[in-house]
Length: 174
Image 1 (tube, rainbow, N blue to C red):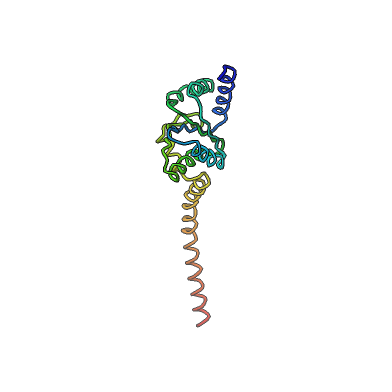
Image 2 (image 1 turned 120 degrees about the horizontal axis):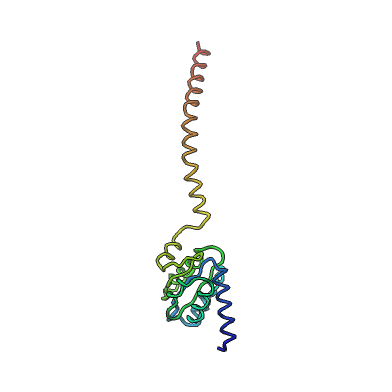
C-alpha cells in the first residue's frame, strides 16, 4: 500500500475511533471469508461496522485520537467492531455470532466512551439489560416506597369509612 493510502486509512480509523461510542477488538483468526461476511452482515443489521485493520495503522490512529493506552491491545490479526449508538450492541452481536455459529472469535478488549476496557469488562457490559429496562427498573424502585406510603396512609381512612358505614347501617336498623 502506498504512503498516501496508508495516511488516508489512518485518518479514516482516527475518525471512526473519535466518532464511535464503542470499539470492540476481536481476534478473527480461523474465520473463513464467508464466515467474516456472515459476521459483517449480522453486525450491519445492528448498525455496527466491522473492519479488519493493520495493527501499525491502528496504533497510529489510536495515538492520533488520543487513546495511547489502547495500543497494547493491538496484537495479532485484529478486527474492530465500531458502534455509534448503544454501547452494548456490538458486544452482544459478537457474542451472539459466536454462540450461534460455535466459531472461535475472541474479544480482545475495547474502547467504551473513551475508556479502555478488558474483554471481561466488555462481557459484563454485554450482560446488562437494555437501557429502557434499566430505566423502568429504576422507576419501579423509586415508586415502590411512594406506593407503600400511599397505601399506609389510605388504610386508616378506609377503616374509618368502613366503621362509619357499619355504624350507619346499625342506626338505620335500630
